[in-house]
Length: 126
Image (cartoon, rainbow, N blue to C red; front, side, top):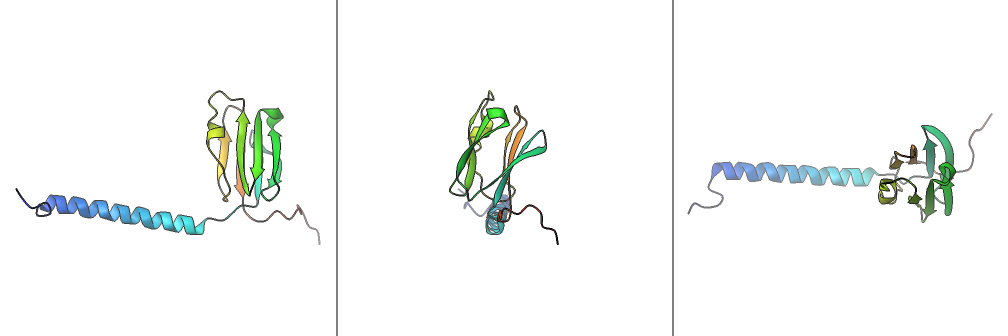
């Protein structure tokens, strides 16, 4: 029986697999280190912004005429209920980092985390 690592093809395969695993680890660490906690969630229906809520304010909000229920607690947001048939939006879990979204296609609803701290000021004139 040949030595396991003696076969040149097997060594090359193991080297390629090792390089891919190392690349995946580096990407995971870079993405994890550059994530930014969001400050607000923006609710859009049919692409039009309808609501904006701070992640620092806990609450339960009916969205889109009550078709979805948004829960904000502990700096995280999630949909706890929906009237769509597949409930994929409910199963997407909690979001808290800038750029994360929950999407409910049947109800044409998106909930997206945007960065920054919500200071309550929408527009300042000078």
